[in-house]
Amino acid sequence: MPHVTLDYSNNIKEKPDLLTVLQKAQQILEETLPAQKGSTKARAIGFDHCWIDDGEQSNSFIHMGVRVKSGRSLETLNKAGELLRKLMQESFAETCRSNNTSLSVEIAELAPTYLKWDSKE
Image (tube, rainbow, N blue to C red):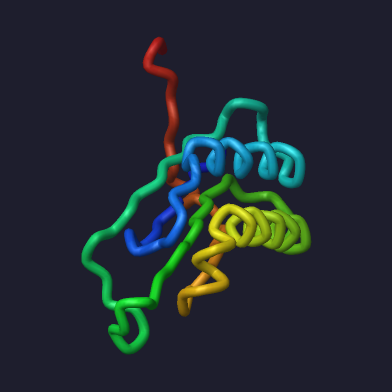
């Protein structure tokens, strides 16, 4: 049941199909964590107004945040993070080559107070 947020500055060069990027992120998480198939909640958010580094207009950022239930080893989380980084580098290859791009991944555990229920319950 990972929660994935892909944040990016709107000055990225290419505009990949973000739903495909999120779907690939879900597949990575299902295979490496593992996560239950089809349980990922993912969204992409572009930002028009950003201050990055020294404010130069060619600076850009792409950040993927992932929140998961506790219980996975640090090694497992790092492996998933590395695969997600590679996915972002491939998906935003032109921006990473031509802009001063800050690319980051953070995988964090959900709080013990996280509650979830199905709307049908």
